[in-house]
Image (cartoon, rainbow, N blue to C red; front, side, top):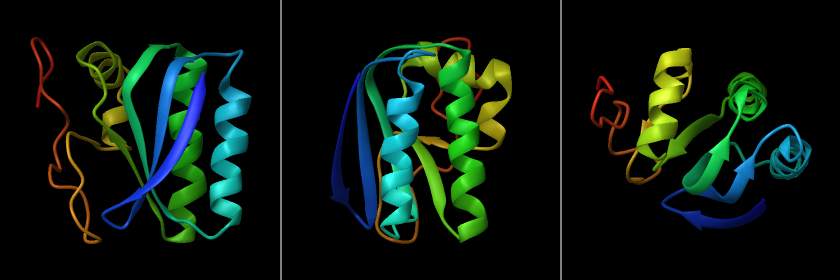
Length: 122
């Protein structure tokens, strides 16, 4: 897995490419911890190039949410694939971390509801 960062509309976008699974979750976590240690609190995980995500990867999303929220921050999932969004919905993770297609300005994402697709409730 590779991770790159870029600022966008008041957020830091972490672009994840490849597979997020038990063998790569530490890379993800270490990267996120470095962003948090630098004082960044508005993080969007760009997931359109994530080709695989197992349960340990999905658990990282919850762990990240729990690390960011008490510090007054916000975590969103940006452009998850339909397959990943379905898994997030089935697992109930969409109740904790919103999924959006686009970012807006500093006030928040432009789409408060989860990405809808075939068989995926909005």
